[in-house]
Figure 1 (cartoon, rainbow, N blue to C red):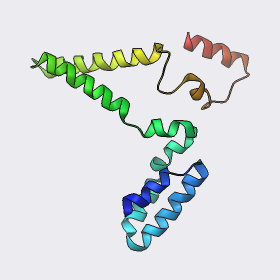
Figure 2: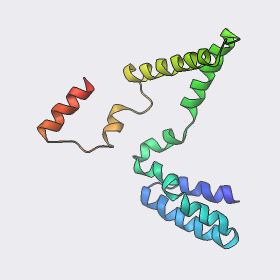
Figure 3: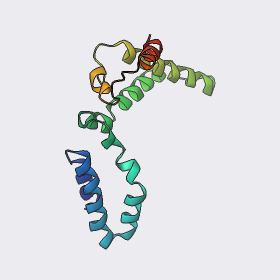
Figure 4: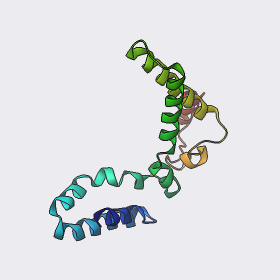
Length: 139
């Protein structure tokens, strides 16, 4: 019951409705479970962090698919190697997988979060110095 009620927070279509629903659910659960109400109020910033992003990003933020894919690839490669001589060797292998995934995301045409949707997160700048600095940083 508690989990189902909390899931309704994430089912709201707009950030304002998400915040309102958190308050409603915290109040409703607080009558029967005061500790849950306190936990929801304490964790409100963490619970509502996804609402700062465009609604199109929400499902991708909630998804664990990229993490599961990385873990599966690390497991596959460690199974091939079998036994590691020391912890540093395992760390090098896992690090190489992460670097490879990062590089693929940097140059791939099809990204998990598109460049155009990420542009919605920051307002366009008109200051010529900021534009020049941004161009230098992305070059």
